[in-house]
Length: 174
Image (cartoon, rainbow, N blue to C red):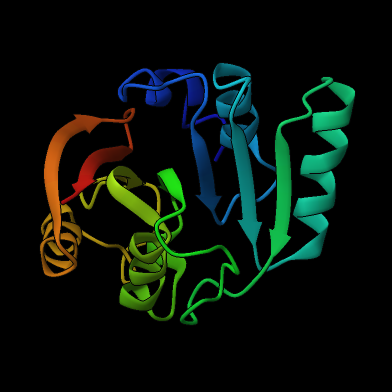
């Protein structure tokens, strides 16, 4: 999937501050987390995933690249409070290619909104329905994401193409 998504291109779609606190849901080996950590050097990036191996790989890459503002948390993001982060804590939550995989998408999205500060941003990247690649049955459409976001008190700020196979949405917590 890394070859399909350009982390820098995606991150250029959102206004970043050097001191932001952010989290990547379902970070895997952390390609986006590391790119973000380089852009917000005075801030912090939490890489959240249910699996230990990718989190270890992320920390290994962070160490190798001398990136010290990344922390990993092994957690179940489909549970209330699952991230273990406090309410209204983050400036930015990223959901790159993770909602389509979730058994309980709304629970995961809700957890992201819970830990997001007022005026904070949620950035969602997922597979375009018309993409020849990606999930067919389990995909999540732009309309589904927008409906979930609206139900959670988020307002759409931006819609963009995140490459040939993915869409991007940026929401603001109001």
